[in-house]
Length: 136
Image (cartoon, rainbow, N blue to C red; front, side, top):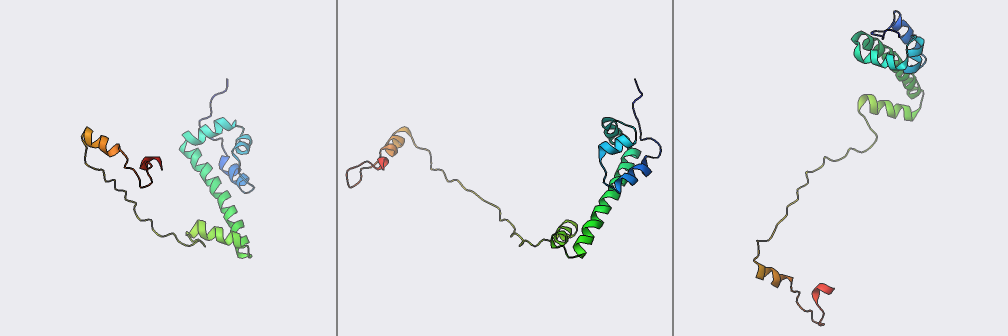
């Protein structure tokens, strides 16, 4: 049985950054490093140095995607410009929502009744046409 991986192999940073320039996928990164994806995820989770290397590679990929989106936005793509303004600068073309007023609900309960008062309250008065009010 092979010894479990404790950190990434030598040269992992250069390899992962090179992959990040063309789209980074965990499974392909693990394969390129000679690791199983399960081992790769565990090493990234448990080893601070490995996690930093992985985050650096993800940053390279993120920057490449932002550059591509920025180039489209500057080139006239309105959707790309809207997305960048919303995601990076908190701006939106939607009307701002009014701050929600707190909701207050008050239940006014009648005073307690004794049994006789309760039975009298259950008796529905007769309407002018002779029908019972509780039947309408």
